[in-house]
Length: 411
Image (cartoon, rainbow, N blue to C red):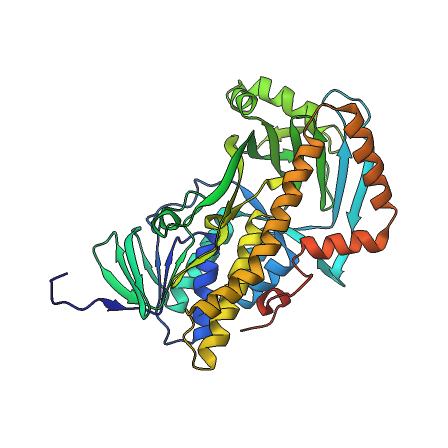
């Protein structure tokens, strides 16, 4: 761009076109109106989506958000409702696997508390919807930005310079924009990694998910359409790498020990992928005309399957705060508006981070004393239907001050 050329105009620039970034783009386009210019930068645009073979649990609130955004109908054929969640606690070679806690039932009549969805399917549906909505998608990163009281100047990796009211970082747990904004974070590694893959099995799962707690970490069996399941197998990082590199027959033996025989034979459908696990929490979710959303703001242990759902709750809260301000003629990127977003999300996120961290420490160990305590605790919870119902609604994102999108209401 020449020295005298004016920057391109945009209302909001989003760095990161993943699941959270595109959901936010669609929500803002809907809330701010068809004339709003929403630009999303991501170097992954236009590349095949087959690399990420993971699946995610989509809680009821997040499913409502995706319905309002017009993408759930495309996702639904590949989505498996989770009708029951069973929690067991044993060692790998234990013959008996007593069930200590069972969650079943709907958050509302006919509405399951969660669904399992392949990430690539959801990413494609969001990408297609963004194209139909006129979202400006650019296959490049955000290179730099500078903020002032009246706006933010964003320099894209494509050489373009844009002038916008708000910049949102949805660029992941190692967010470059968070660093450029001078926002620090508290973080640590768990020394654990998740081995993820998909299996086929002999008998129907009937929509039942199983969280089998083992000393190195949880082994989760999550139902997919057909006689298939997504596996999230947590191990110490050094062991996870070793297991993933085993010959197929040896990996199969280790899998069968943990999977059990309830669903008959089991075999690999996809190759295992290994992802290191850690915790991170940004010291602030906002800056001057700047906001963090999703993994750029927080990263938690997957023990409760809440990672993506927390990001979509960020989306719902930020989109509502921005839209409400814009509709009454206020500067929607003012400190007051962004502080509303931060108040809405930071305490809930910190509470979930602490809860998942505590659960991981409580269950991922060899202590017999802790095992007795936690199993008694799980058994007590299992006998308290009202408390279980509260847990289900909280996991579904339907407790506290619930944003409109999570209630299934349009902005």
